[in-house]
Image (cartoon, rainbow, N blue to C red):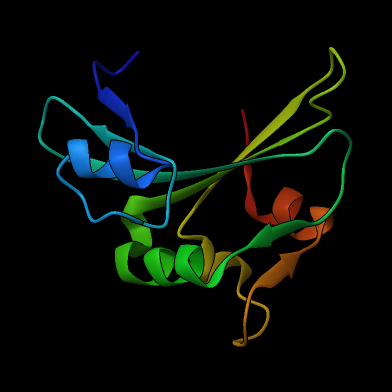
Length: 115
């Protein structure tokens, strides 16, 4: 809707083709007409529950801060999906600093913008 060009970069081959490092730590790379860029990590759950964020994804979230978005979709197996978009999840959701981090659905709902 904003005229952005969005590229799937979730594999090393796709990331490399988009001019990024092989494992950028996010799934989608968005470039808007004004030149601004967004890194978007997408997570989906069949129902509502915790999600896993890898070390690489947390690192990318930390490095990109306000340009990094986490999109979480709950209830993917139903007609009542819920999308939450969280800008700068490193700041909004960081629970602990060791390995991957599990984020509760309550934290996602609190920090997210319901789409």
